[in-house]
Length: 220
Image (cartoon, rainbow, N blue to C red; front, side, top):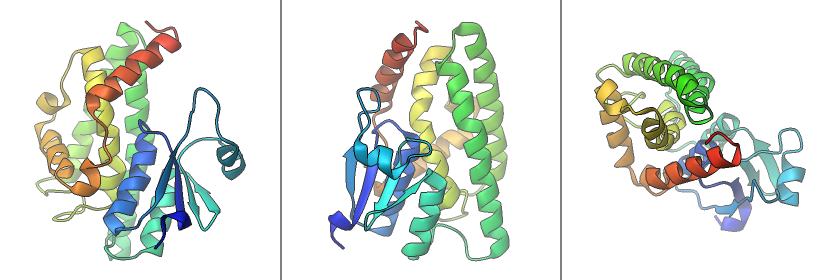
């Protein structure tokens, strides 16, 4: 499959873009990632491909656009069914989608409450994030991955968000791994996968980006 058939409109620090690229790597599908300048001016292709939200990621398959990372990952899993990201049974698939939805609704917001705020509000965000991760630890149980023995849909949806953990840990003076060691071990297992490790950016680089963004928004 030629790279020209699949294009991802991308931003390196976006966990949502990371999801799409990890899914494609898991499937062994070649693609072209086009980095967007989200601060200096979005491309015409982005504005045309996602006129509703004007956000990345946008996934173009033979020039047909799709937006929203969970929608895109679902499309990738259906279009290239092997290896499957979602489990085979309808109940297990529904459960996976439930936890992916939980991650979408909870984790990114909690991260934002830390890095977008000064100390007092950031402290509340820290407490919230730890509680959310502890719920995820309960869902993980004693399994290696949320999909059981194998890396799957919920793992793929969740792991990119952890690339922002170091930044919020430094800002709010805590450690997710100390608070939630089982989840910390899960992160390390995921990062051993080449499909993940080649996409997840250096957390220090994400921290530098967050510091810059805080200055830009007048938080610091």
